[in-house]
Image 1 (spheres, rainbow, N blue to C red):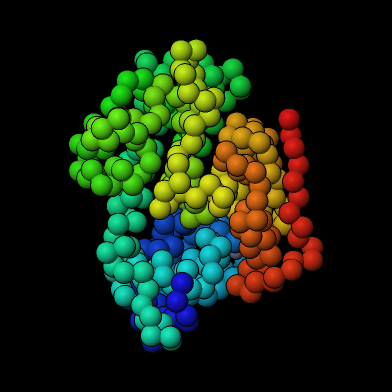
Image 2 (spheres, rainbow, N blue to C red):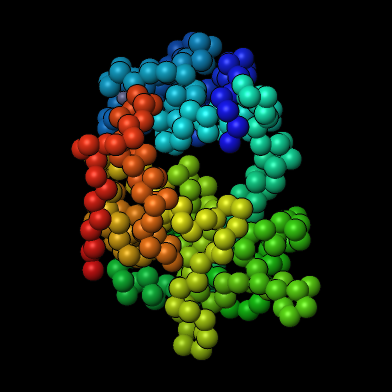
Length: 329
Ligand SMILES: [Zn+2]
């Protein structure tokens, strides 16, 4: 990424962003008098709301734990991104083009638009798979979950779904939603025939786990074989795409990030079902790599979360926060 974002652009993004609308995406806010909203604080555990947002002033404050700041610090703390990443994300949301101290500009608007279209396609696909889990054809998927002790609520919590047998269920669904051919190719959800002109579903007759980034957006899928006659590998994941880089992906990170930062602990387990089992057993710091070993990039992500003390400062060598890996099977 280019150098420092220009100060005036940061101010512009901050003032143009509707802080209430953004915080609403994380916290359920209720009116608390004129120009003020309140909700349950996302930074500490509480039963009655002491987290206040004042859109006119562009600030939030928690009377319980003292956390306060503006929309940039809020999103940064929630999503555990760097300051620049957070400003870039908010700018993208506004369609605002950033300028940098070294004369560069941020991601081009057209690239931001492309990325968003790709994220939208993933969201639609995740919803499609989740809905398929309740169809008669998904009996094998439901049996698999039940045998491992996951009830429908657990499946819903993790967004588990089912990719139907057949060649074009998802293809038809996404095409029907206006996803273009180029975008379909960019999702990694389709394979091509020998002439490369025909797409078919990559995941067929499989149990599906949506894989999300830190901010909770679906960026790929993990799929487990369910039928004996499936010639493919036991687990099949999204291939490398513009969104999905397996060296940086941690399954469960969206659900685990808060506890990882709070408890300064990360538990790395083997696979999707292990993450589910851990979270349901109360070990909500559990994550898993997806089809690859826990590598350098994963350590970076873990360190960023572990060293996050809520002030936005990053320590490069967290002394109390050595990533702890534990195998639970
Ligand atoms: Zn609080």
